[in-house]
Length: 128
Image 1: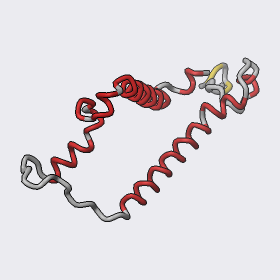
Image 2: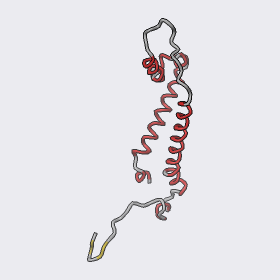
Image 3: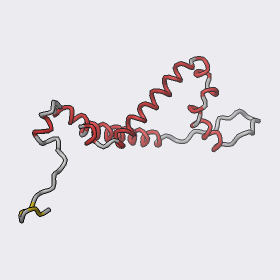
Image 4: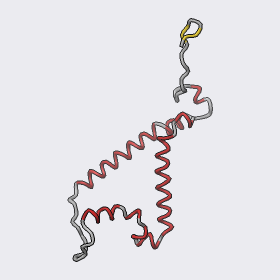
């Protein structure tokens, strides 16, 4: 921008390295935990899950253990039902016996998913 014959720089958002950001009472450790530590934790979690998936895929696939004579389902249908059984608490005996524990499980995981989503949706500059 040009004003009175001289160039004027446009104002920029403060960065954690600026002294005036920390003068508001926020500590450098808090800023580290909000930014870098979160990214490090997500990278660590992604690495651990990738290694676990690689380890699991080393094992040979198991055969179908359906009772003989019960032709109501096939392999792919049984696999889908097994993977989706967590969303069908009425199909698991443990959740019928302990519905409060299943409710805790659902609320906890919904909270974790919302927290991870919000860490990407809410711009960091709004948290300052």
